[in-house]
Length: 293
Image (cartoon, rainbow, N blue to C red; front, side):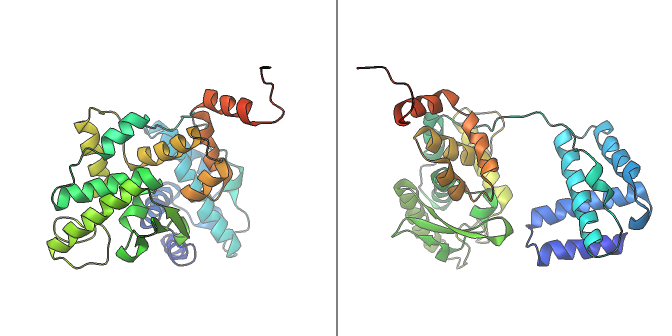
């Protein structure tokens, strides 16, 4: 089984251009699955897969995590079927655990402003942190996208940034004027640090700032303004999308900005402010009932 898993992981890395995080998760999930079934792929059946997922839930894992692990098994067996290593994919017949629907968490406009403006932008660390927070909220980038930015990706003159998203797909995203100003200030501090590196954001040692480091920045300043709940870079991404929606932006535009391949992924943001959407519809749609003046 290990040989098949290794080939599948190489397929993810080379042909699917999967992120390092995805590769790590799939490798761990499939290793656990292999330890559970203890048989070659040709002998794996429906009962094996159902038993594995049931064990995950009994072990205390969330249904979301169990569903992700089932997804890894499905992808793996689909790959083996396509490669002719197995004659059928029994994982197709296994239903995903029913996951409760949770609306994405987002900040109010006032809290978002307070958060991004908390670092005073004096000195390298504060200037970097301010630039990161401004960029996350201004452009709705994923944490991995921010960590992967190069200096040449940022066009401060035009207020644009080139982003490499999931599957290494590139897109151009606007950057707000305040975020541009924060990035310009940070770039001056970066020069003074005298650490030449092509990565846009660096740590104290002058090496690329990690996803984890960016998450710590968000949590740190959120706590400083009194937000102690679950918050991270994705909270600012959700806030970016929901505030655009509340401002009347088209859902297709938000989809493009977020880099979603499917509109259904973006549609969850429509639940954030249904009252606002109804109000926009009543005011804008030509067939909506309007009070006579």
